[in-house]
Image (tube, rainbow, N blue to C red):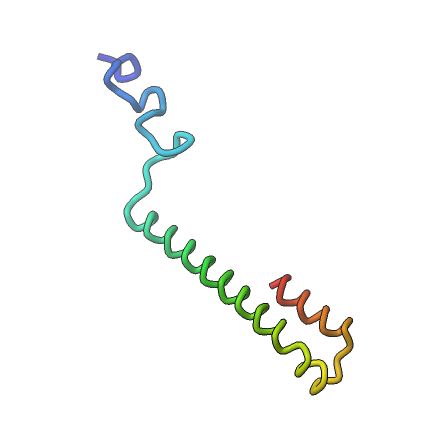
Length: 82
């Protein structure tokens, strides 16, 4: 019997495959995906905490480094850009 005409074969209509019809992932590829998502989350959390710490240290930074508000805004922009 032709596998394209078999009603029990879900791969003929794309239902036996992954999202949007791609081949199923291997176990290593799925694990790598979660590692990358975790690293992106960690980088985002660290950047968020650094921006919070910088906002608390505004008076000290501007006094010790003789920064204007424009200079400080450039530092904050660099953290947001990263």
